[in-house]
Length: 276
Ligand SMILES: [Fe+2]
Ligand SMILES: [Fe+2]
Image 1 (cartoon, rainbow, N blue to C red):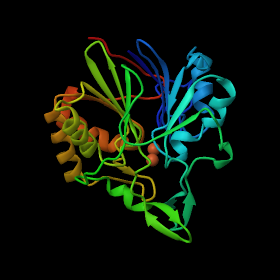
Image 2: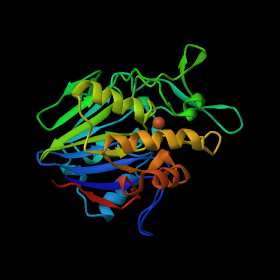
Image 3: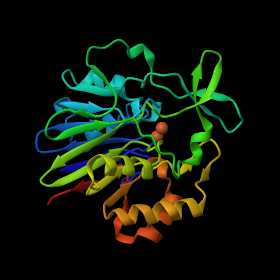
Image 4: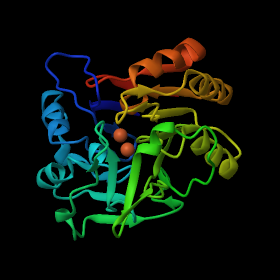
């Protein structure tokens, strides 16, 4: 399996732009996939520079209903006429975040894209085929990201704390590896892994994505003692972790000091090959 980072918050190359967002291109045995689209059309511009033909993508997944993951959807629909796009059934909710000045800002996905028969709305455990699965419905609340307290869903005229039922994770099984993809892990990467373990009595071999240890509303990294607990748990799973985006560089460096070779950072333009 080859994973190429089309966009995230930092860039490994001057030729490739970066933004607050996430988009991964994945070539597995049976599929060419897009996991998230970043915040804008930048993922597509970078893909072109990286000589990746996104018209050949046969399936896309949007991890959750925030603009920094689904903001490039229109650009993708325009350049690819075939791929189905899997979203959680709650992904087009009215999501807001606190701005640094305390105002609430809309951070959902562009609703003018609805309806579209290429969208596949799902929930819970979904087996797409022998290679791909999706799951949502995480119940645990252990070591939840503290940044979630600045994220809301609008219900009528009131703002309720987001429960992240709109978030889903992707599993790709290939050559004996089980690779788990998380967008922002708003449900908490520890809870997501515990859910995975409760279902399968095993841990993934690799985990890739953002772990939401940076709060944009306050420009603060997660509490160091919480990061230390998360790092110890992640290390105990034996999986290999590749992180980026809303983990934040500061929290990543703390994780690295605990997890050593078991965690690495993926910048825009970097490539990861997972083989047996
Ligand atoms: Fe998010
Ligand atoms: Fe995000």
